[in-house]
Image (cartoon, rainbow, N blue to C red; front, side):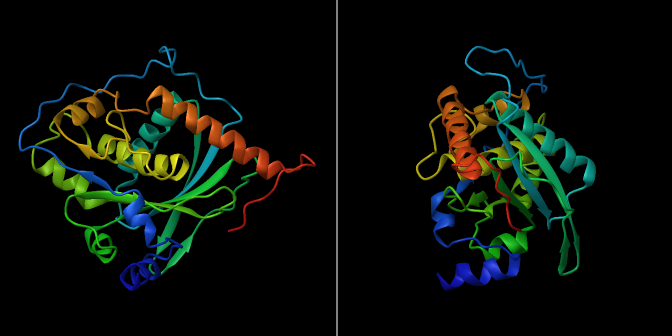
Length: 250
């Protein structure tokens, strides 16, 4: 508990110690993998509805790992695509980190069902959270009404996977994109939301990296249905009995 508390202070988040146990995503890959090229998503695929305009999540991104802007934007596009296949849209806000100061632009969150924080951490910061070299990230608990749901992605893990040659045809942006989708998915799907297939699988091997490279590592139809139901519930809670939109506090 004390170790997690020190790490949280260093990152500047409100993460709980239980989060590390709740949603740890261990990424394990073999030495050699082969991948196909990424393909465009088919939004009319059976079992996956188009993104519902009223189902929107806002994500503030804290790029502590200094991921290049082009890579970051492409990874966010991939994460958005994965959620959109499940019927959910993602609104991104990339915060500016200036030394110990963080600046996020003022945004209108009135249309969002939930606001999330995604921190992309370099190896040194990840280790302060107790992460091993093979840990891809984790997420905290995110009960309805929470205004600062926090997820973490460990940048060095994605880079090491590529250097090891197990993701030869998958770009860094794709690996970061699916890792972010996994952790953000935990914020809405909750405890025990790992699954034997899809993006919520706890351990990734060659088949998962191949699916990621083809744009096919996504939420299952059942998980997508749970995501939509959870967001509808949270939006209803935000509007309240009078139907007036609530506002997220910073």
